[in-house]
Image (cartoon, rainbow, N blue to C red; front, side, top):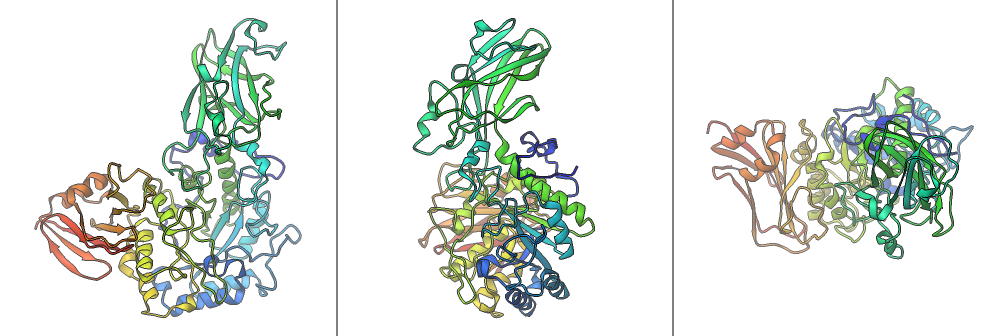
Length: 620
């Protein structure tokens, strides 16, 4: 089915596989590429921001070959924001002639001639994040035709200026699409012409049942986060609000579990038939009270549109909404999942266009909506990877300035902000789904020490994150400290292991919490991650996230590993019954034999890690 978007109104979601109710069914969009390990390459953004050029890109491609990075698996060269002409030319995308005088096809040819792959960038909104007025919204087919002409192999798509969600740089009135209205009551009547919109049951003929939203409704899921100024309305005794989907970009929200809410009513009717629903509602156009409402019975939608705007705290009765009910008790759902559905539809439209226009070339689709709509829920349907949070750094570089990054911070722009979310998202990822993307590597930027670089690389490899270098490759030489980190073949092998399973956190020193599912933001801790590998071995990572050297010992044994990984391992029985193990430290190269089944790390320095590969010796 061809998917489209419009700049006039949100598209009606016709394909049921793009609705909220399909998110857990595991089905991907027909034609989506599966079975691919995390992509590796270089992206221009962290190194040069919007200042990347044709000349710089060619130099980076040259350096990838000169440094032998291509032989290690780094294959994509991706142009990020700032490469296009500021506006469309005859409705089509065009290069910025000052920055890319030879055009994108010539650059693609240059990159392909080196045995590398070529990637580009766009946005599901009307503009790119840089403000260039060339977003894909409503132009997917035209843009895919351009990408065919330019022989792209990879497309990263951002989420700025999107019209149908409360996205970055979007109009503040977009809140109307994100949250359902405040609801005070709902009234059900028998079908047939409605003579009145009154919610007073005495004024309705035949079967009539009125429900008070607060007293008679029930909430499932997590209600929409409200600002401190409006938080009091979520506990109102008069109405229900906050029915929407939490913005997952901020550091406060866990990426796991329901981030949406629904208001449900159980209504018992005397016979099968058509009934009418009257909603007593108010639209405030503030967080928690928008205008879009979906009314469903089971998975069948009977209403999915904007309700007319009201005054602030003015409650009115809606026009009748016709629904079909069965004799007996029915659960009627009042909800708004369109934040997720609209964004998924937009990415599906781009994928649909790519599959139509470029059927004979594999083009990976990298979703970059920064975790706003919790893409761990739905990203697998259309994307090969999906960003889980906002940018890892906002201090990007330029030609001559490496930019800067940091280990931890209060917002999203740090290594640990990204890690803390990604480390509990292992169940969302896999060869048949795609990969959680905690953003590009910041190795080599100012603020990064050798130890931080080592741990950052180890984390991303254990987490099966895309390995997209973000540094100016002229700043490194073979066998210098940075090169040794990004070229550690044994660490890269973990990321590119054929089994394709993200590591699971099996222990943490932050006491009293289940390690693999609990979202933890206190970084004064040690985490232990375990990753099953295709040859039956297990990678075990010890990470000191804190800023202090630790003198204690930390360990995991075979029972701990099997408890969390047994159903994911190739040969758990061999691991369980092995009399000895070959243990290799993947950073020092040290190898030893272990007969205890207890694997230990002592005296972990601040922000440092130890990565072990543990191979069972069967029959010994």
